[in-house]
Amino acid sequence: MKKYKFHVKGMHCKACVVLIESELKELSEVDSAQASLKDLSVEVSGDFGDKTAEHIVKDLTEVVKLHGYEILLEKEKRSVKWRDFLIAGPVALGFILFFIFLQKIGLVNLVNSSNVGFGTAFVIGLIASVSTCMAVVGGLVLSISANFAKEGEKVKPQILFHVGRLISFFLLGGIIGIAGASFQLGGTGIFILSFLVAIILLVLGVNLLDVFPWAKKIQPTLPAFLGKRIHGLKNINHTLTPFLIGIATFFLPCGFTQSMQIYTLTTGSFWTGGLTMFSFVLGTLPVLSLLSFSSLSFNKSNSGVFFKAAGLIVIFFGILNLINSLVAAGLLRPVFNF
Image 1 (cartoon, helix red, strand yellow):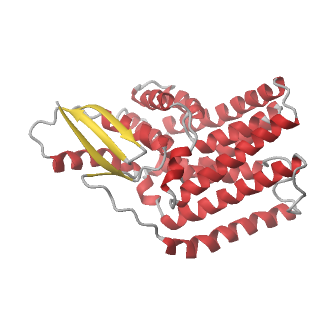
Image 2: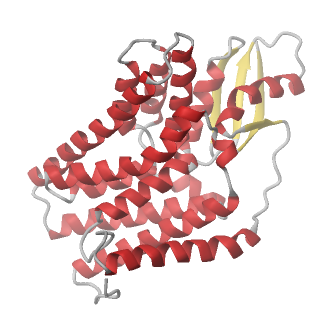
Image 3: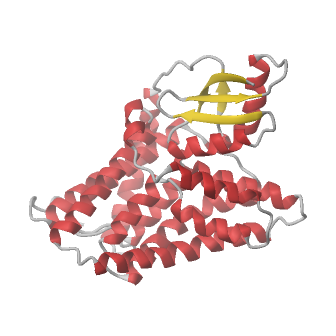
């Protein structure tokens, strides 16, 4: 048994930690794998025979490169590509102005003075589906494709997976909405939860910019063991396994999902809560469906410009919800007239 510590390129959040550990542990020669978001590293132990460290790094990279990661011997020198903002800034501004225009003409209920509209939830879902915080879900999609393709099943498992996600997000979102009503959240409670949603969105947006490494440490997630248990389901080749995994993704450690779940508590309604979460998961559907049926990988879609533009959009929603929560609490006069 030997133990090695390597560096990881492409790790952004705790969901990445779950995915990397789960994938590496499936190698027969790896006995344990412990990834760290703090220093972007992974510690592996196992029986690697007479392989050199360079050879081991190559083998480990082969397992995780499909998800956009790379195992390195030396720590990558970090550099911020500020020039990306020259394109990302105008793109984000154009996107925001376009949706504000749609809101002004009443085509979508993007935002209002007191809550997150279904349009906002959809847009956040769209951004979440291509951010690295959805790496675990993407990893599950690709793993399901590989496992069931061996049995000659290619389309049906993917459909069951996405149907399971759509149904579970609507039903569980509705249940959370009802739970919020049962708690009889007053104005103060709603303000606190709305404020919390805004802060989470701000943290997620800053992380997408990939400018401040310290922000990764404060990104909220569910306990990692839930993600590991859910990710392990992909190895069970049962007809309904994809459907059950789709349902289980509601509980994966994704900050975007959790921000919407927290907001849903404030709705106090089954239908509003359910439709909010349904709108969110509907936003994730196009990219994850494309991933399902074309075997795209995250490393092919990664773009510094795109993530910076997405980060600016999420920050906009975070600031907007922060202001709206303060307005609703009577602590601030209305700032925006839309």
